[in-house]
Amino acid sequence: MMIEHLGYRVETAASGKEAIEKVQNSTQAYLAILMDVQMQDVGGFEVTKIIRVLEQEKGYCNTIIAVTAHALAGDRERCLQAGMNDYISKPIHPDILAQKLAALASSHT
Image (cartoon, rainbow, N blue to C red; front, side, top):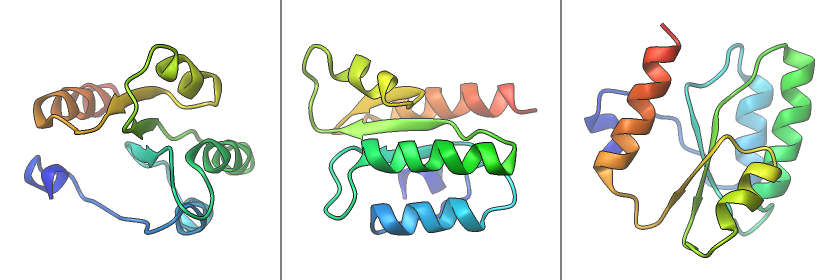
């Protein structure tokens, strides 16, 4: 709801598997994928790796923002090394998310 209130269209995935399926079935890149690092079925790091392979086949790249409850030293670096583009910790602060999405939207126009 937070993202919808900012004026963006939202698609949700209840699991890592569903996120992969959505990217497989997409015909264009998403402005941003907010990737929960700790999902029950397939973890965010593994989902990111799979999405990056799919993107090579599709010829475009999504911006993947890691979402994690951990704000420990080194977490951001681990997310970036796993192929994610950015990092945000929980609880998500609406103003920080709004800034990140606005920057992405302005670079896509």
